[in-house]
Figure 1 (tube, helix red, strand yellow):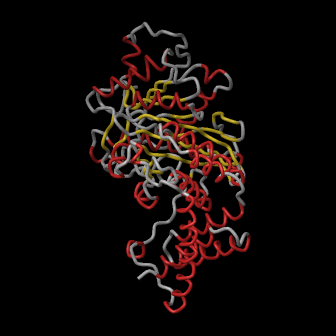
Figure 2 (cartoon, helix red, strand yellow):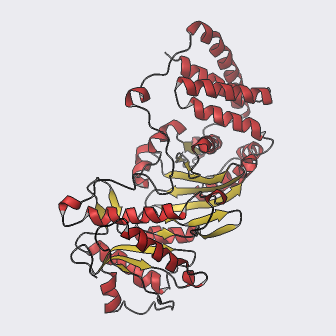
Figure 3 (tube, rainbow, N blue to C red):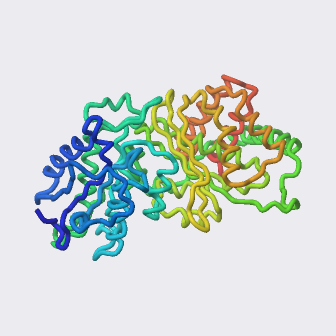
Length: 473
């Protein structure tokens, strides 16, 4: 059966390692479910090439034979990305993935196509069944020349990293994903690509099923434009004035103490070349918008601790908000922020079992990862990893901290009351919504933090900033 698109042998070519099908036939089961989902999605018959007995040997000296080359002439290439797939010596990698990437880049429509919706979509649709090592991710991204965007079929937990099965309970999966939903996403992606280049213009799809990055399952409801850009409602000036003055005085005293303790804020006289970095908004992949405050907290923590390093220029957190869920290339984002490094972070799971990924990207002269790590921690223990993370980030960026700064980074991971941190993080998140309801809720959380530890300055600082924002103007 020929492809729906003239000039192609198949609509979909499935590439995988035999090793990933031996244990429980996961790939065969995936194909079976995908075929049924596609039948329910398309009016036409969609042709799929899937070799039940793919090559597993190391054939790096061989050329792709004419038979395989014809089969690779497909509209969509769908590699099953596993812990074993990213092997430069394997048949699947060299003779399928790399070969298709070259063929598609040079064929009549190109590897990356612009859809009627205006989005640009790759004809390589990765199906990711394991969390990958940083070296594997780098190998794929270097071959594709862009960041890896995959539809994930991963069951993840403490010490668990395996393919998602149809009967898996999403409540026990850190990714909170349903197998059927992921199958549906694959079918919709196939439809978007094929109908996006369909020879019959009346069938060309205008709806985008990938408006945001894969794994962002629940979005906050957007506010009306008029409301979103309206200034926040003011609190009565007579009540606010003494409160703001008092709290700002506290902030001034705390800031003065920090300045006295910190000597030599600028190190320009040492001749050390300063580097610039921005911590991008953290992606919440839990599927639970009520945990958005954790994303806010991680970004604030990383930004705040890096700002204490004198040989490093750190962009304010507010300047990065415009790049939340951004699809812009890394180098474009870096240019707009005037930095040479960007920090990407994400988390999934639950408050008691968080899987956190942090990566540092060097944008110029070419994109490359200088640090990548993942951690599984409960929220209460989260502060304990920051010392190692900050030091690793600095090492990857080749930035030297002073002895005093290293002590300060270590001390910041010390005696921290997790309940105070949680209340402050929630307060900050709701304050930043810039709505009367958000400010009121933020104030309530900051007051809760003060009740937990009246000696901690952080909630007072948060209150001062919140009141100042609410009563500004």
